[in-house]
Length: 249
Image (cartoon, rainbow, N blue to C red):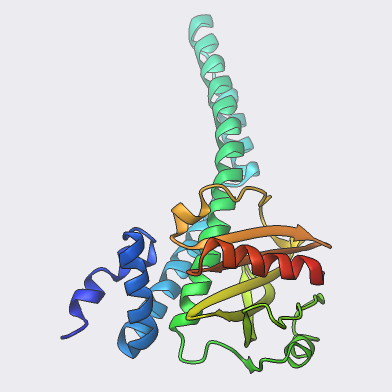
């Protein structure tokens, strides 16, 4: 019963809708409470499953064309009615095209950012956050060979203030990638690496990410790969680790 008050706010926490100070308190509790960690992981997995299921029933372009042909083929009782139907159809098509383009770009980008945050939270809540446990980059990097369809470099962390915990395979939009976990003091930072061409949207805007996700985050493209650095560490730490990866690549 001790955790009931925490679990009552767990969905709000996972959606990043609690105040910053409370978010840090929640982070610490989830990392140290097996019950809440397991509950958080199951809720994140449920969210992702529902999200993926919802996309399976998106109307296709062919369906839109069939509906337009069906409307156009109907007999017109009068010139005025025909003109109104044609005008309405044109407006619907125009608004639909503009809306789908705008929302497609925006929601696709925000969706990826949200899923990255979910992967970060789910990994920290897991009882085994990494598949290869090592502080040596020369051990962690070769582990990914043959498991993901690309290669990447890991930075030298000497005198950087960061330490490598290990790595694991992960998936974003059914695309395989690498997930690396670093420590910066008492904070955990996730670094995700995916092939740029496999991701569903252009991801060029870092603005307001911290406010939306309740995490500090940076993303960039380099050498055909898309990098994400995310965690509850300071923005300065996130930026420093991102710079180390940019230099290594």
